[in-house]
Each structure stands twice: as structure tokens, then as C-alpha cells.
Length: 171
Picture (tube, rainbow, N blue to C red):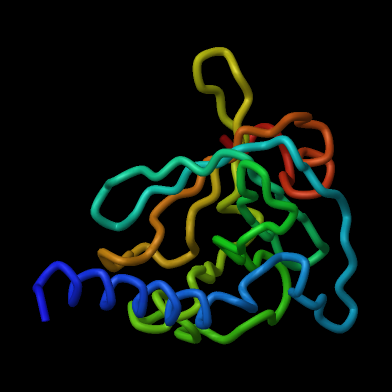
């Protein structure tokens, strides 16, 4: 069998396995926890995330859902109607335990990262005369595969300030 044919078969097989692992990784399939309610959604925002290695990754076509316990960051496709989950950020309440879903293997399998923070680590800032929201993890030791910082470029700043940021002086 020619080498190029083996490469094509392995590529297709890898794509099928990846699609099977990712099939339930959509915002539309994520259930809310008990006593959790959606406060607002921002469907025209974008965000970027910095890994523990210092590399930034931009996520356009984002849908950001803020609940009373979590910030859920998802990315839509150019023509798709579903939004792929990228980050689940717990900022209030016991949404998951420390260390859960934190290994590189589980991140690769689920396609998303879970981050624990609190309101003191969510800040309002400025970037090129534009208001942005910066989110930092509660833990100061960030591994190379974990997220060190998330920056949200909101369409409208008011709901974020009203629900997430304690005071504007906490810069």
C-alpha cells in the first residue's frame, strides 16, 4: 500500500475519532447546575486566552454566557449554529473541585478548560482606548497547558460591570 494512501487513511481516522470525542462539547448541550441561572449573554464578543507558556490565542465569533456561578466562553463557526465550548470559568460557588479536569489528557479529550477564579480576579481594564475584562485564575502557579489570563472584548460593557466586577477601583 502506498505511503500517501496510509497517511490519508490515518488522517481521516483521526478526524473521525476527534469528532466522536467532541460531539457533546457544545454550549447548547451544556446543562445549567441546580440553582444556576443565566444573567446575560454576549453573542458578538470576542476573547483571547494566554497559556502558561505566554502564548495568546484569539477566539472570534464568541458567545459568552454569564450565569450566577460561571462564565461560559464558547466559539461559533463562520456558518455554524452551534457554539463549541472553550472555557468554563467558575467564579462563585462549588461548580467543580480543585484539580478536576485539569490534566492535559482530559483537556485534550473534552476540548475545553475549566478555570477557578473569584470576583477579586476579574478586573476592568483599558486596551487601546477600549474597555476590556481581564480574568485571572485564583492559583498563581499555572502549568504550561493551563490558562494564565483571559481577556474579553465585550460588545456592551454594562452587564459585565453590573454582574461581575465588584468595584471599578479594583484595577
